Image (cartoon, rainbow, N blue to C red):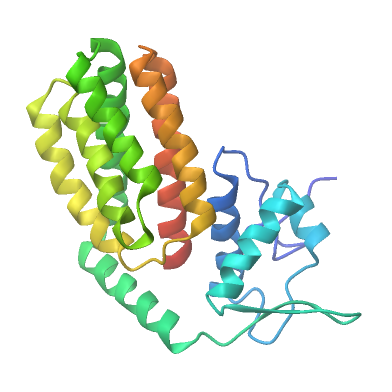
Length: 245
């Protein structure tokens, strides 16, 4: 018998994850539990085994996501017979960052989802065009250099390096209009991303996707480039929606 939302209030927030961005979407689902009040402050999240089964993610992915929330002081992990992950009152620093993110998002209003969708259209299309047109030696080297910069960037400089890589793809696709529009959209998105802490597991995942993306472009695989870029952007959107929930 299938579960219904009415039978279990956690079903809506703990749907199985189907995309390739399991880590980001696991964080999003856990944040939804907390922000929607499905697990009130001071109460315990469902056991790890239950969460992993509901979300259909590995225990390793789940624990990495829980560690992020623990580091952000959104949950407290207690050991022992009566242990588990308990929802904590939102600390001032997280509350401040969250308030600023919501303030900036509110300025966009209905344009927030439109901005994320427009970004997807631009970047997925740019990745496909790059892979299809065949880059020159200098152009290919530029992508490789940008990829290396994101892989070696310190946390304080990562956002800038990431932006440069994505801008390079938009500029190398062959359309100056796409590049100009993307620069505007990325500036808007960065205002929101700057309110979200940089999460090391997320950055590691992003770097794997960056590597696959650049490889698909340089190998001349337009369909693969589209797929990787779409998955990559879905992870970012999931984090934003999670922190805004």
